Image (tube, rainbow, N blue to C red; front, side, top):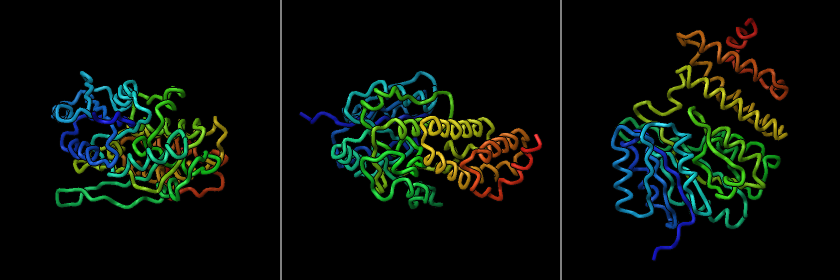
Length: 321
């Protein structure tokens, strides 16, 4: 008989037929074989559901759950969370790729430390210009959050960890999610940012690893969520997620982590959004970015931080509203 699985990987997917096979193959290639995967077909209109079903038919470690209509990434992940029955759980979006040692490395770490979760590094998987994808390098904010390895820590020990806000670079004890009643917000984008900060602030302790555990795909056809940021509704969800994440850190009294997160938003997120806003045809988009910039710059922990040059025009306009 096959050993009982120790970890469940929740794999939500909506219309990801061109990429799902890579994600499933990356699970099959894991050096730790005692896993099970919940494949959540979120009402796909392409062959995603068929690909998931074929995987389950050929390998009992895969199980498929179907949404009759699209409910969104947060709801799909929550469907998976409700069905987990193993000691550990992880998440993998169906267009991303796990590195072969990822599950083994993270399960081994949690077995040794007893921490509530472990967070690893990740890289972008970008189009290579000739029909394929190439993995990039670990970005500075990811490296700051995960390198060097730290075990049994809290945010007070390592405030920069708050910059690792994605769901799929972490492996957790299932009991931690259950005891803390953690669930993803639904009907919105960037649903993992608030959950990440709740994990950091509620964990007894956690671990970080510099190992790259996942490759995060930037789709060639431009349909990744982060490639939709010129849409006003996506912008609003992005701003809400960052604001609510900071509110979690503030409420938990994690001032140093909040300050680190503010610095990262000011240097990385706001300039990107400001560049989009500069040429955006909708004045409401510019107002939304400007209002967020104004609220962020008014925080005491932003007082000593420079305002990026791209943000200044929107911030100046916001002061007149």
